[in-house]
Image (cartoon, rainbow, N blue to C red; front, side, top):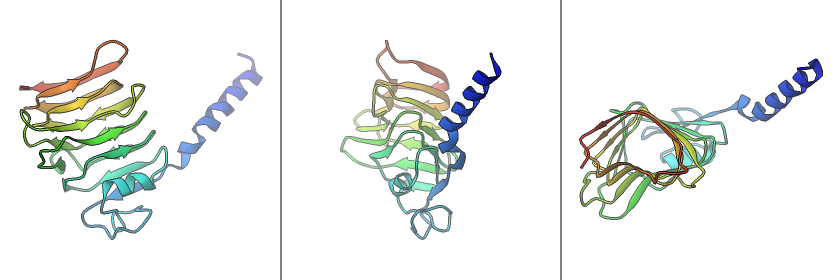
Length: 190
């Protein structure tokens, strides 16, 4: 490759990735003071969606320990949502309504949560429902228990190191145009 072409290629890569060079962190916690833009544990949002909405592409949202009853969270492109560990940060909502905890968009990451749907057989909880067919998402280090569907939709994903237990459906995705890399533990599905 000629030197000029190489330099132009490198500059184009830096220009494309430049936006992510200044990625920020946002926080949601049951303990924070709920002060926008939620950039510390002390000023953390009291709602996961508020912290997600304050974030820009390339940012990471950390979610504090505890049980979160929120659902319908729109995790837009290029954002990461990270809990404090699968036994610490838990989505749980006792409901008879159809709900989805998170709608991730392309190039988002969901990591270190437990998604507890309470009742897999008659329940109506879907933990993760990618928003678009062309979504490519990463789902890692999570535990899915008692959900109607742990992960459902028509999407591409890298799904690694997750535990699926007592769900009606672990991963419900039509075969065909979906690229899914799966390295997880599947246990005791109904």
